[in-house]
Length: 225
Image (cartoon, rainbow, N blue to C red; front, side):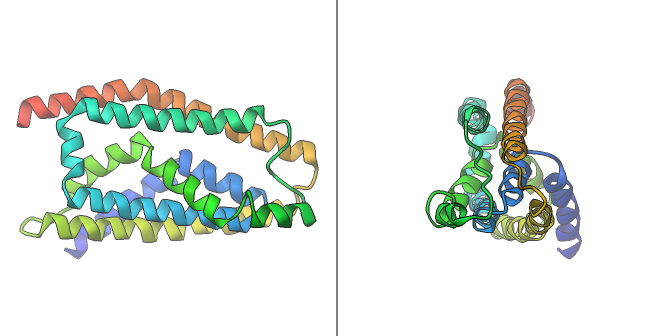
C-alpha cells in the first residue's frame, strides 16, 4: 500500500508543480502581500482536493468517465470561470495589489479576506477540467489490488490536500517575501494584467484540449465498457 501512496505522491507533486490555474491564483494572491487571501486560496484548493477524493469514493468520477457530455459540461463551466477571472484582472483599472496602508488592511478584512480566498481556490480547482481528468485517470491507477476503492480514494484525496499545503504553502512564503519589494502601483497593475493573461491562455488551451479529452473518454468507454 505504501509503495502505491509514494508513487501517487510523486506523480501528484509533479502535477501540482506544473504551471496552471491553481499556481497562478496562489502566486497572484501572495505577490499582493495579502497573506489572508493567499492562505485562503491554499485552503480552498485543499478542500477541493478532499471533495475530489469524496467524488471518486462515491463513484462520481466513474460517472464522468461514462459520460463525455457530462465531462464537457463541467469543462465548459470551468473554462468560463477561468476566462472570467482573467478578464476581471486585465480590465480592472485599479490593481488589486495594494500597498501596505490602512486601505490594504481594510480590504484584507473585507473584500480580499480569507473567506474570499477559500471561495476562489475551491472554485478554480473544482472547475478545472485538468484536475477532473487527473482524478478520473490517476486515482484508479494508484489503488492497490484487493483494497477498498472507496476508502483508498479518500486516502488519495487526503494526500492531495496535504501535498497542496506543502507545495502551495511554500509558494506563498516565497512569493510573499518578494512582495516586499513591489511597491509601485503601475508595476503591481501590470502583474495583475499578466496574471489575467495567464488565466486567459490557460482557459483557451483547456478549451482546445477538452474536445480531445472527451474523445479519449469515449474511446475508453467503447473499448472497455
